[in-house]
Image (cartoon, rainbow, N blue to C red; front, side, top):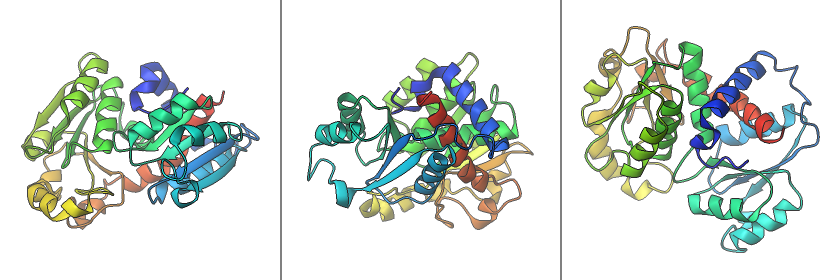
Length: 301
């Protein structure tokens, strides 16, 4: 199966994958070599730390072989057409995992390749991150009935995958963004379409309204890769949406803080919150490894 969007797994698939992620985290040595010989292509059009290392380690721990490919070597869509790259790699590899700028490139890869295509990040979604986010939240409290507040740029790939994945799993989500920075109508409709009974999806321009009583507070950088030219304008608009101790204090007394990293300390979040005793950002980073293992086990079974 292709994993281009978090909704591709559905509720049963997400539930099973998260359960597997929890198991492999507890039984790290026991799962080594469970998929011997699986050849996984890991393509990076964008720089990466967590994604590259977690994916390479996950493939290796499972007994597979990772092949790291970079844009300056492959020339996806430039040196060679996307469909032709897919057809070539399909002859060599068992899984194609791609980190790209354009989601349409993933769709073209999936259309041309027989091997499963995994979205390691695109301009539309970041589903592997959402798996780790949900795993981290599940370690804190049961997902069903939980409330997550996302503060900042609600029109980015992290928020999109989080909204849809959370809705599928019974997690209510509140997104606080300034006008023009909220989730697209299509994203909101997609989350509502898959939402479990009782899930509330709220979009507001008031950070306090979103955070008050929430079980987790999440934020992300204000300018992602490819948006560097907009950084100054974005900082000005999003400055009131910084997650600081005052805002975090409005959440539930045991609320956790989440961030997919890297964090731009002093912009979207303060040092005091990133380093707070209830911050779980490095648990999230670790869970990228376990969640990707669980996904590989699922798509190569």
